[in-house]
Image (cartoon, rainbow, N blue to C red; front, side):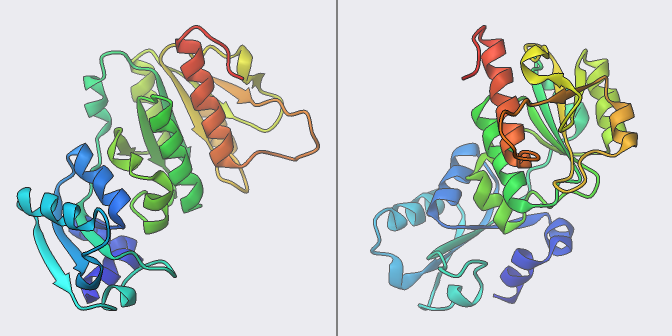
Length: 260
């Protein structure tokens, strides 16, 4: 149990071992569906009668995953949430390299998170990117760990559905430019209105830090700037919301429709 706690709470341990912890049947099911490589399943034996949990255990057993049946209350001492789930799983991290994006025959929008620190925002962006058919998500700079428990929950399993890359911003933009992609730095004001940007082909949207946005060095690396026009008095949009709007605008443009 000590190892599970360390994997849940320490980024360095997750990356050193190449393993993360999934909490709850929904997230675990999503990982199974995506073909993730499981290490073990931990189940509260007092909850085995719950609908779906016994089926999940059977699925794990059939897949050759080691299953540990624990005394009631043991997982409560490990879990990352106030209302613990009755099942946890350890799964090997799934991370792609930039060069692996060559396998994508038709490159669409790539979402780049640069110094995005909030796990909820990162998870939301990954989930929305998955839903909108984004080609890949890249995390650059001092980003939150995509396998942080909060990020995993916010992604609702999408972290396993699309290529997830950890790479520097300059390296990422250089590689994607060689694939014919045009890069857009997102800015609160002064950029090209989103609806006027061509997001129908290979392109990159760079989302900056929640508080500071993108710094000048990042802006200079991009080909253009993009602004989501607002009508009200809000100073800016949440990073997760902004990225979601861009992802679905790109989807609508690829389909030859308009968002909204």
